[in-house]
Image (cartoon, rainbow, N blue to C red; front, top):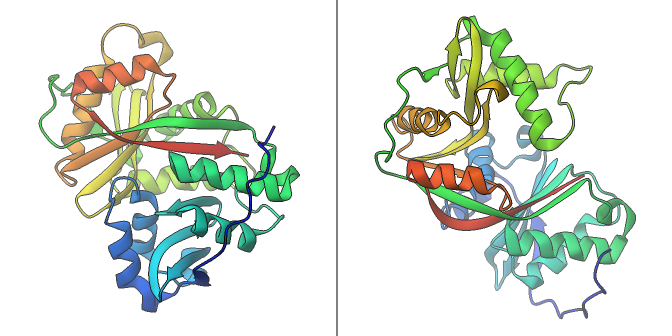
Length: 288
C-alpha cells in the first residue's frame, strides 16, 4: 500500500525535453556520479538525446536556467540527481499512464519517485511485481584478491546456443519470468552482447556452466550483470575464481568494474567482497 500523499511543494524550477544541444551539460551531470549513472550515460553516449535515436525522451529539470537533474523516461524510468522538487515535476509530467516496465536508479530518489507516482495516480504505478529498495552498488578497480579461473573466456558465436540457454535460465531465476517472447528480442539482445565482446563464461564439453556479461559501459567504467552458475556446480567454491576471471577480462577494457546486488542476497555480497569489490552506493529497482 502506498503511503499517504505528501504536501505539495512550491516549484522553483521547470522541466523540458532535452535534445542533442544539451549533450555536454547532460554528460557533465551524469559523470558527476559515473557508477550510479552508468546506465543512462552509456545510452546517451551511444545514441545522443534525440528521442527518435534514443528510443525515449530524457526530461531535464532546470533551476535558474541551469540543468540540475534529468529523468530517462523509457522502458526503464531513471531519475538522475533528483531532489524532491525535481521529482514532483517528473511526477506531474509522467501522468497516470505508465509506459515504463521498471523504475531504477539511486535508492532514495527511485523509491520517492515510485511513491509519488503511486500517491498521485494509484493503479498502474502502485501495483508492482517486485520491489527491491536496497541494492548495494559495488565496484573494484584493482587486481582481484582471488586468483582468477583461467578458463573464463570471452564467449563467441560458436557457443551461442549454450550461452543463450544459460542466459534464459539466469534471467528467469533473477526476475521471476521468462524473457522469451514471440519477437525474439531477447535472443537478439544476447547475440548482440556476444558480438560486441561483452559476454564471458566457462565452457565445459561444449556447455556453458558459468556466465556473466557487461550490461552497460561508459568511458573507463562498466557494469557487470547476469552472473549465473550451473546449479549442479554451486556450493563447490568455484564462483569466486570465476568472478575474478570476469573482472580481469573486463579490466582490459574498463579499469573500473561495478555491479549491484539485492541486499538480501548475503552469499553473493560475501562472494563479491571476497573477490575485492567494495560498496560504493545503494540502488533500487521497482519492477512491473
